[in-house]
Length: 212
Image 1 (cartoon, one colour):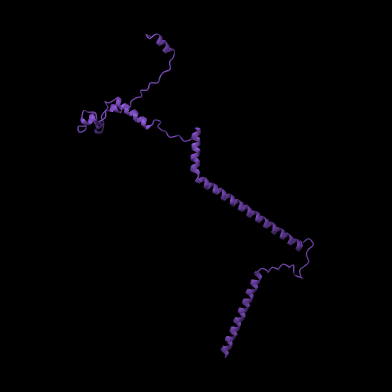
Image 2: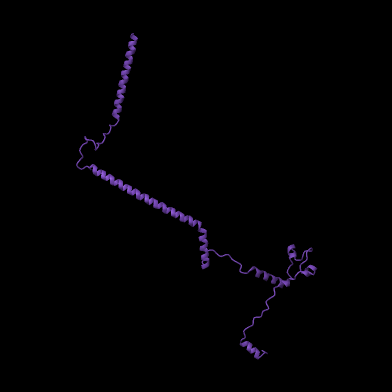
């Protein structure tokens, strides 16, 4: 029984010390924490203090807030309209740019053609042979007819100055060469039409004195 009483007394003492320690911690926490702010007086509170002489009334404050809200709404609408206009303008410009890119080559071609017509072409015109192929061919035939002593094609193919042994030139005396048309036959006959010349003083003098 004596031991039980001692244990009970020790437990009570420990609880008392723990209670004192907790109370000291709470006091320290209250001392460190700031004081709670007092709530502002409400306009609907009957116990609210009367307004100061120079303070703004509630009606004026409400009117000011309404005017500010209306101005904000108007500015927002203006800003939205301006953004919409800008977006539409950018979209239109983008459309123009796309169309220009699609037609760029056509525009460049027309521009260069116009400059070529006016003689201010930045691009040099390609050199075109003015002599027609038919005329060139006729000139070549006449040249071959005038110089029949050219090296035969067979010797050109063989690489020698003379004809190769297995091939004969076209104009050698053989049955095939006799039957084949000669190079002179390829010459186009020149026009035999004589254009009458207009008579002048020199012709009259020749008729009067034929010895001259």
